[in-house]
Amino acid sequence: MKFMLVKKLIGEKCYLSPTSLDHAKYWVEWMNDLEVTIPLGDEAYTIVTLENQKELISSMIKNGVHVFSICDKETDAVIGRSMFLAVDLVNRTARFGIAIGRKDFWDKGYGQEATILTLDYGFNLLNLNSIMLGTFSFNERAINCYEKVGFKIIGSRRQARILGNEKYDVIFMDILAEEFESSVVQKIVQQIKRVIV
Image (tube, rainbow, N blue to C red; front, side, top):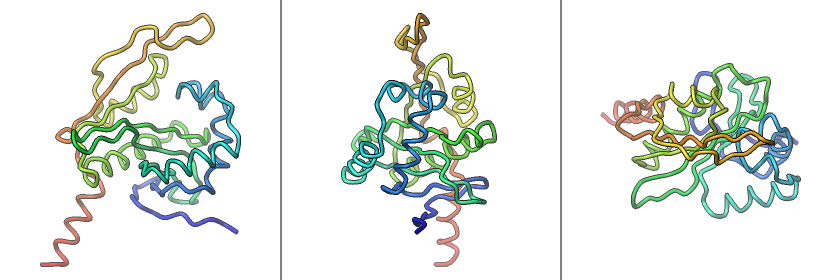
C-alpha cells in the first residue's frame, strides 16, 4: 500500500509534505550514502538503521519538530528532507537543515526551491525573524545555493571539521525575515482576502 503524501507548500518543481514514519526507509538509504552525508556532518559516522530512523522520526513528530519530506511535483517521489531545529518562538529564531538524498535530483534546482519553500513556512507561518544554518567550507554547491536564496555568511569556526588529514571550517550563514520574499504563503493569503472581499 502506498503511503499518502500531503502537499503542504507547493513550488514549480517540488513540494513539501509532512514527514511520516513511512519515509524512514528513504532516510536509511540516504544517510548511509557518504556522498550525501559527508556534507551534512555527524550523519557520515553514525550507524543508521531502519529502526533508529523510525525512532528519530517518531521523536521529531512527538516533539513538534518542523520536518518535511521534499517531493518531486511530477512523480511524487520523496527526494529529500528539510527541517527547522532549535525553534525559539520567543526570539523568533531557528536553525535550518536540508538534504536532497536522491542524487539524480542534484544540480537541478530542487534544493534551492525546497529551501525557499521551507523558509516561506518559517518566516510566514511560524513568524520567525532569523534563520541560521551551518555548512562546511568544502561544500561550495550548498554555499552557492544558500547565497542565491538570500543567506549571508556571518562567520566561521576554523578547522572544526576534520576528514582524514584535511581540516575545514564550518561556515555560518543566516537570513532575516525582511530579506525574504514569500513565493507561496503570501499568494495564498492574497487569494483568501479576495474571496472574503
